[in-house]
Image (cartoon, rainbow, N blue to C red; front, side, top):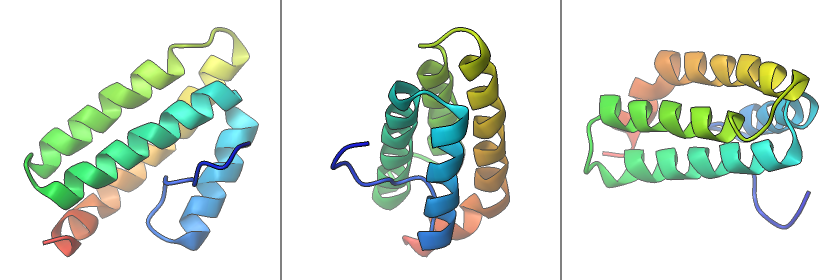
Length: 101
């Protein structure tokens, strides 16, 4: 890919799995847009200027925009991957949001 650090995931293993999933399921362009969404989401959690719900809603919109740049099979497979990312945010986001207090 390039020198950008992969940000999606809350630990090394999760980031590794998320990156590998993105490389298989999404185009490179989608992958780096998704990575940018994760960075923005992490910053949102860190800064606490928005509620967790607002941060998560913004992440969802960002993911939708990232996926929409492609058509065909990669749009579908990437959307499936992003759905799993969103499930993990729903399941574990409260811990991550409160951890940064």
